[in-house]
Amino acid sequence: MKHKSISIISIIVCLCSMNALAQEDGEIIFSKKLINPSDPAELVTEFQSSDYIYSVAFFGKSILEIIGKESAKEVPVEVLIYELKAPLYDYQQPSEMQLETSTLWISGDALQKSYLPIDIIPAINETGVST
Image (cartoon, rainbow, N blue to C red):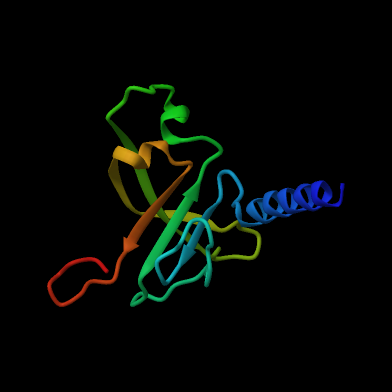
């Protein structure tokens, strides 16, 4: 009986630790370093113009489940980047200014995942390849 209770406890601990690493559905996280979606670290909310910017968007379902087309080979995802502008006067609300828009085509294994990593401004090595 003691062996059975230890197994149940270890299963509960595994499930709890997996949930502790999971991100919120609809959450987008940012870092100045590449992000491991299963163990995000060194997250930031502000950048300087010289910083590298990496992000991961988390969804409740896979990309194929979201669009409802399990046979899709490629899926376009619109990426919009906004800057939050401070109000000019106390009675105003902050405003959003669109900086960039682009279409990212998702294919292969990425369609089965419930997260999407995006290198917004990746580090480039001497040969011009993203690192």
